[in-house]
Each structure stands twice: as C-alpha cells, then as structure tokens.
Length: 183
Image (spheres, rainbow, N blue to C red):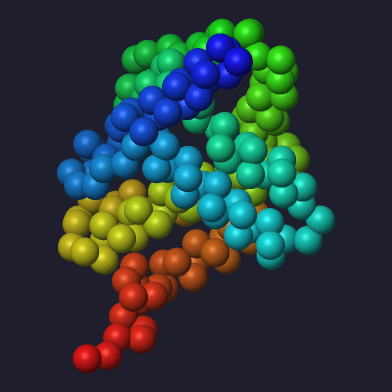
C-alpha cells in the first residue's frame, strides 16, 4: 500500500498548487484540485445527458487530466513559450510503482489525443470549468474575463459543450441562489 499512499499524497498536493493563468486575469484564484473537481462534476452531468458515453472513462479522464501538474506545476500559455514540460516523463514516474499505472497512462494519453467522444467531452468539461470561473468573475465586476472568454469558448469541440457554454454565458452566476430568494 505504500505506492498507493504516495499516489494519494501526490494527488493531494494539487489542493496546494495554484493555477497560474489567474495572475494574468488580475483576479480569481483556483487550485488544480478545485479545477479537477469541477471538471469531473461537469463530466458527471455530461454523462447523464449524452447517450452512449462510458461514464467511468469520462470521469476518470477528468480526475486525471492534470495529475502530472503535481510534478510539473501549472504553466500558462506564456510560460509554455519558454519552458518545456515533459508530461510523459512525469506520468511515467508517477505510474511506475502502481499495479494499475498503465490504466492511468492510457486514460491520460486518450485525453491528450482527444480523438474519442469521451476525450472530446472531457476536454470540453475542462474548458467549461474555466468558463464558469471567468463568467463568475465577469458577473462580479472583473474586467479581464471579458477579453479571455471568446478564446476559451472557441476551444469547445462538441455540440453538448457549446450548448452548455452558451447557456452558462446567458445565466448570471448567482441565479441559482437568487431564484427562490424571499424575505
């Protein structure tokens, strides 16, 4: 169980690793674990509205898609211009002592190739997680998200992701809270 304990501590560190792109927005903050949770939750929702989806695969990809960042950190697009991250090496080191390591590697490779329906939906969930954060920041008065939202919206690949994002953009971030407000 020692390799499992180490894996769990490695995944746990993602609670402490902050996503770097928010510095450029001038507002907002999110850990990789917070982002991964939201991505997985979005995948759960997608699995309930998309027929014929392998739910376990979709959720697993969402949970694992940024696990390498426990070793590499989170590089934003500017940092990626000047730094080389060897994600494959990070994943190979992560999975080496695990009896199910190959399962992790296969899921991450499938996510990265983005060829299967599940991988495309997981990619969209990854972007929708960011769209939710940007929309909340925009709705609360931040100016940076207005500039970045079109780029993130343009990354969506599936009709489901595009429709979900469209409805998010037409919904105030606190509408769920205010809908039934009474005094």
